[in-house]
Image (tube, rainbow, N blue to C red; front, side, top):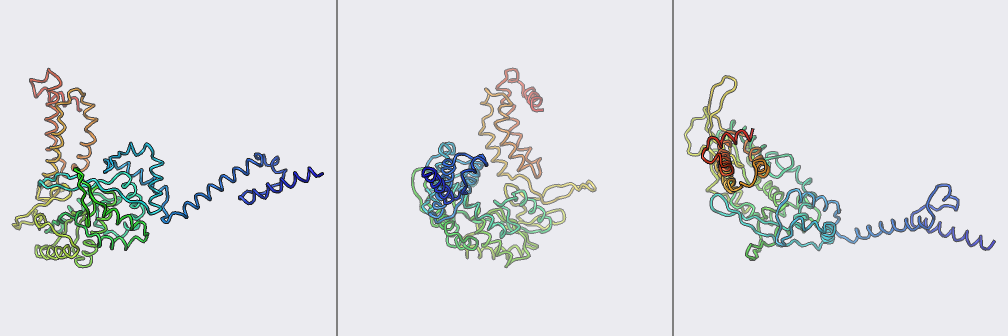
Length: 456
């Protein structure tokens, strides 16, 4: 009897323990009825699960910044999809992924605790068409993931406030949308103010930028990290460190969103208040304004110049100009009758009225001379005639993604102009045929015919 009493007391104690850890208390008969595992295993499993939950809860409470781990992981996937080179630490994506779980956890842990500090930004200078150089800041992969995590948090908050005629770096909007709207409005309005801001990304005022951000973002940790990203120094190729007190790095993940928000208040919102009747298209800092008269365009230019100075920006007077959209119906003489916008040149061009077959002069976009020359330079750099060891399908596989990108973008309007650029590519391929096959070295026509058959 005493032994049975001790056993019952032990079973009762085990049942109480299970209840304390969140499991159901049960009698000794429940196991056989429910078909469950032995009691000790059940207790151990419940303890493990509860301890894990307690650990996660205490870990979460210990972090002052509430950042979901899955947000960091999703940010990593987006950064990987975007591609890009390494930052100042020289770590490529493949190397980062060798310890992906540990690296992402370390980043999350630092961001959650407030101890995350970005590394200096690698500065690469890219030559521009006018002989100048455009500074491009490349953050490390870890910093790009951190910035993407913040972008994912704040973009849904900011996006609804942007102007309908702002097209740059926004979901479900593209450069083609801006070009199409500009073309449509050039048919309706005779005058255009082609506006260019001098060194816009490099001269954004940090005080005004943070003021704009605080109108939409309340989380202190986001504001803290944004202030760190925009002030982190550049490091040049020779190792020289450049401190920054203005500007947003071109090449950073968060830079386009911050620049868009800054211009939203500097220009878009201001235009709706001061010049509500004047329509415009803005893609980042490339802006076209449509005016009814030359006088209206001149007054607008003066007004915008003052606004830029007020916001510590400066118009590029050499590139900012007033343009007359000349057509068959608009025959006024004016020195400027063309402008470039997003890689296209808008100017008077011959068009055909499909209703009656009559030709007329319209104001239309087509690939610009700068863009065409950039494509030619790229094709020349391929040195196709030196790729004699490869067959034509292999070369096509190597270069078709680039060519398709050109066709999809520049071929949208006046594709015939783009076909002129590809004559160089055709001639280079004919030269490749003559180099690879001896029987075609003495005859350009035969090489041309062979290439035509091969590409059909």
